[in-house]
Length: 310
Image 1 (tube, rainbow, N blue to C red):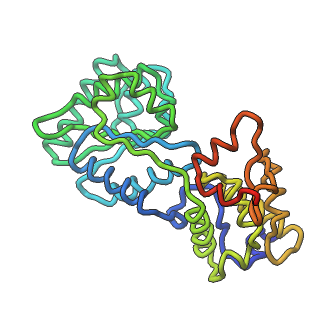
Image 2: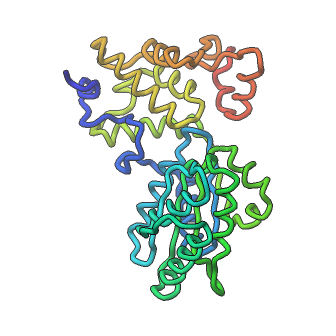
Image 3: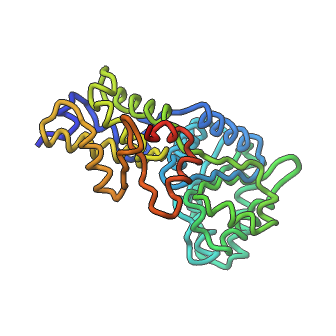
């Protein structure tokens, strides 16, 4: 059975939800965020925090930062994908392993001392910059946040021995701000915003081109399908890609030469996204569930106003 994307003459699946650098599309805001993070690490500024709603690209941005830092001989990088360790000892061992350091289980005090010696030797004697990237940081316990604060205390004149970049969902900000002694150590706060309609359309076009097509988006989706996908995604890249994938897959299964609004609306309904056709001439918008959801969305994404009924 041929993959659905072959039906449309594509070489690869354009909407696979992974942090594949081949499909990564930057924007001026993302480029600025990456530059600020790299600068903060190289200047050994200590702690940086990236906040984003689920599906808005924080893990992809972390992958780009990782690739850039790994390309430097003067940087040693560690990474933790989920800091939900059960206790302080497990977290310290996880930090050590992320840098390739094999430490036997021992007391937290002994582990901290061993890490401090390692960081000093690498940063001062070997002249390296050390950075620890932590994804899904909102999952860390209060005990882990305290350990992170203590690790950030390790320094020499004019530089930190360890730089930490936390990536997390919106609740991470409150978690950090509630700990003033940690919040005061944040050198840079970065918030990833949702895509506007033009950025969403550009991402669809970029993905299709990178999948091996020289055709325009409208060769694969009719205008109604694009409008529906962009509106239903409400600026979330992951949802945009998921809806585009499902829309093309259903169109291919039906043998259509390109996806239609019907395919896109079916994809949205299958994922519990309610659409109200009365909102637009060509587009659709989320139904107001009675709790002001649609109003809130229009305030957050002003371009939705273009889809109001005349």
